[in-house]
Length: 404
Ligand SMILES: *Cc1c(COP(=O)(O)O)cnc(C)c1O
Image (cartoon, rainbow, N blue to C red; front, side, top):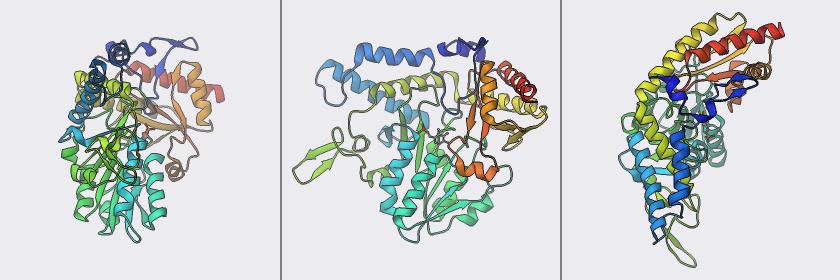
């Protein structure tokens, strides 16, 4: 994979920040967008824009085709059985909340268990916390090993026949661990429960096959995988989605509306009340075309190499704490520099044109588990190079000198 050539397809990366060529290492928060995606959104607004599913006119059918075409692409990308199992949402957060609010109260009651982990992003933690509070269910946490990974024996010990829902991220946005979600799904199913996978950090970086994982629900966001903000999706098993009630009511999602009762459209539209983010879906479709053109295996391989190169180089900086496992599968590294607040680290790095994240990364319980109030995080994508890592290492050495 030629990441230097790929970088040129991302107009925003071709600029200087504070007098230095930009090195963008905040991809776990949001990725940049290639020209192909920006052009697809522009093309949509210049030639196809209209509302969907109702226009008899030509633009109406162009917009509907573009929107439903994007759904087909998402289905193919995740290897879903059918496009009707793809619900467009605002992103991962909305998708997870849809499951927690609709499937949750219908299947979880007093004395039941919901199983999650302490490494979850707030988006895959608070909805379950709320569900437990509302239903009287017990929230249980799968223990984590000192480097943050999970042992299947602990999964076996935590999940019981009372467990109705297991919700877990495939890839942690802080630790960079890849969780054995396929094995966890099997354990959940053996106990009569279901699994909900937070795919926000996996979908952009590796090949996903929801049938192979045998997951019940799978959520992701477009904006972390080259697509615009405001669009993402929920995949669900058909019989589960069919059995669920909508949580948003209004236009677009109805079949027949009476004065006192109404009926809903079939899947997936019963969950998509109101005018959807059509241009966002078009952008997501273009992002999928772009990523498939490179190949997700190649993306994963590139990031794995970069991450392990970065781990090696960063280990050479004295006073730098690295969180998570030593060997990396994904391109995401969280760290702290001794005696320097991560916000100061990020500020000095920014003065050298290097963008990294600092803070709790929407994982306050995990920060407590790590005994850190905050951390810095560098996260990579297909356009990052070894030179970017070298710039980061140089920047951190400068930061140390600055505060030393
Ligand atoms: C970013 C992220 C989310 C939330 O995604 P949104 O796009 O903000 O809805 C959830 N989980 C993980 C692991 C994330 O990295």
